Each structure stands twice: as C-alpha cells, then as structure tokens.
Length: 199
Ligand code: MD3
Ligand code: FE
Image (tube, rainbow, N blue to C red):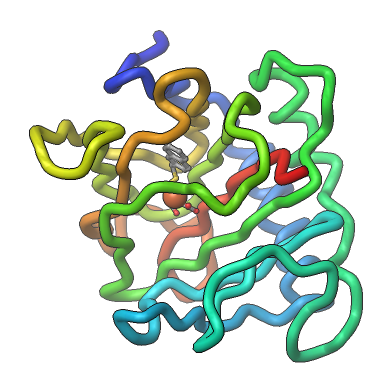
C-alpha cells in the first residue's frame, strides 16, 4: 500500500529482509573503499556520517557543499553504485536515466538531520529515490517555501521513498531514530541511501 505524504511517495516494505541484508553487505563494501566522513556545514559538524558511490559524491566541508568525482580523503574515485541499489532506482524512478550519485547516510545513536532542501543537483526534473535500512526514523516533510505546516511519518527498514515532481524541492529532515528497533545493522543505527541524477 503506497502512502502519499505531501507528494512524497512512500512504498512501505519495498525490500524484504533478505534484500535488506544483501544491500547492507554491499554498502559495507562501499564504505570500505570510501570511508564514511562527518560533513561540516555552516552550522557546524553534522551528526550523520556520509559516504557516496557513483560518478559523483556529495561533499560538505568549511568551503561549502558540492559534488566531487574523488573521495576527499582517499583521493580515489567513488566506488560504483551496487547493482542491488541500482535495481531499486530502475524499478521506482520512472526514468530511463541511471543515477550518477548514491549518497549513503549513516545514523548512529542520537543522529538527526534538520529540515533542508536538496538543491545541489543540476536538474530538478529527475526524482530522488531513498531507501531506509535499520532503525526506524521519524521523517518530516514541509513545503517548498520555508515555514508552514509539516507532516511526519516513521520510515522503517525496507521502505523506499520517491521524491519527484513538486515534491522534489520540499523541505524535509529526520527528527530522531527509534533506537534498537532493528538488528539489521551491526552496532545499531540506520542507513539511508539516496539516488540522484546530479548532471
Ligand atoms: C524529499 N536524507 O540525504 S531520505 C538527504 O533519511 C536526506 O537520510 C534523509 O534528506 C535521510 O538529503 C531523508 C528522504 C528524502 C531524501 C531526499 C529528498 C526526502 C526528500 C529530496 C527531496 C525531497
Ligand atoms: Fe535531503
């Protein structure tokens, strides 16, 4: 049963337990080749750790936010996007173009993400696809304009969300995790994968 939250399409339980476990194993390989980093914004260090796969990875440091072809610490290209992840994009994105960026967000205890828009990409006509793994997370969606009412939903392990059309530029964030709600990830926590066409 599909849920529409302010134009965000949530597909609950899109991935079953075995597919989730296989994807986590693939993402561990990504993190081995491209170590997770702590992004820094103007407001200070983020609580979410990140790495990327694909041609372009999202980087945030004192100089700002941007997409880069090389991991800032290893100096190597990002690893390729795992087939397990690409298969989800191809099934739900509604476009023939493959993503060139796969952002991997790691939420450990206490991590959250404030309300923001995703505007660092070159073409907002492509959707963003998100895959939730591990602990449940309280996801908040606002509107395109700043301020106003918001709506919230708990994202659970295996849920997929598609942000296209008018929803592509809505404000969104993660308020908190339900810690210990899943045993999928060793050491606990949550992984969120987002797929984008950057350019
Ligand atoms: C709505 N990630 O990586 S996923 C992000 O759970 C991000 O880690 C959150 O926001 C997370 O930028 C939320 C759901 C999501 C992702 C991208 C969106 C919702 C979105 C882009 C546009 C609108
Ligand atoms: Fe975002």
